[in-house]
Length: 207
Image (cartoon, rainbow, N blue to C red; front, side, top):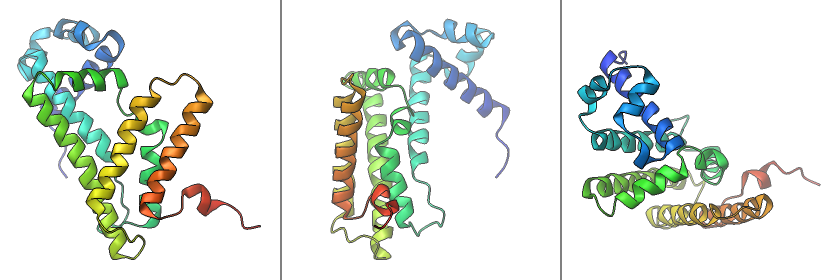
């Protein structure tokens, strides 16, 4: 693969700073001027790359998708293993997944999706891509007789319904133990849907 161009590198730098500023001050309070001040550059440079705050927002949502898709790491392409699918489930129901993108911004953009068709389409792309990625992994595991899931797409959708619902509900939970207990419960339901053992169950010593 070739090296990224200076333009691509600078665009990504701006997107990342936009995310940090919006995370700290809120999306509505974030402006191109504030981003430029943090980066110590002229606002016109940001406008050169993105033209408007809305354009920058669209690029950030695309960046969200790229980050979320990092959960699908398969060592042998086309041959997902039990460890691969277990690792994916563990990631989905972990703080690492929840911290991939700030909840406040995620739900801010989600709300904007009801007013802006383009953002709605981008969010739908994210949700579909995540479900399709998991369905593909389940299909590969079926082919190797690791799983025996009748409908990988429906099962993948069910697991992400669990994920989405879990984090929406648990974002209101302030009791750490209750949070972890409920998260573990939802995770086990995902394992049950796949009819495979959890990582904890696999690693448990034999008495």
